[in-house]
Length: 286
Image (tube, rainbow, N blue to C red):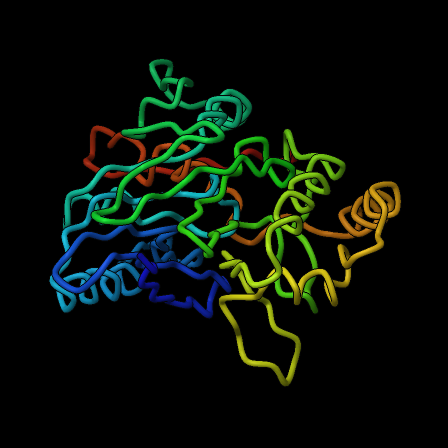
């Protein structure tokens, strides 16, 4: 069965979220949902997530899964809020525990914060499969951007997280804890070895001036034109390019709040005695 795919773009963070479903009235998964966050006011809202809820209701589908490709550093996840609204189970790559272990001491999280991924309902390993109604999804390990990146394959469609961007943008940075440019190269080659017609659904697009944002590219398009990873680029050349570029990049605008929420499966930190949740800002560290 051909998967039905509806992308949703958040222009503030350049993020694509997806509703994947088998057919109207059937079953669905949501991939990489966005929770709106105003860094000036420290205020969250649900406009992007509500669009997903409205679409799910309009199609009459039952939500089975809320899936993350990795612990994002550029937007907050709406997974927990969507689970409250629609049900479903949350899932992420099993190596999320290594990300949690890195960031627990950085943010001085509560002593009982678990670093084994238990905040998520399911941790996926390479080759695992999951059902979305009549669709079967396969999990692909795609580390490099972070150690926990995974993709989800449904037939000729693969949701690839931050592994690749549109060909005129290139590839994801690899300078986060546990990231590795050589590993990303190998993950990209795994994708680029798929049949040319395979559609690669991106987590982000940052279009140059004059081009509209686009959610999808094909393997053929990536091999022909990706500015970092087109056919013929060696691993050594890519690693040198990626490391040089990463050395010029500042921290993502929403890195600090995003990580604290996303390693909790989209849940807010425990409330203080006054009933409020707080995020922490480590000074002179990141």
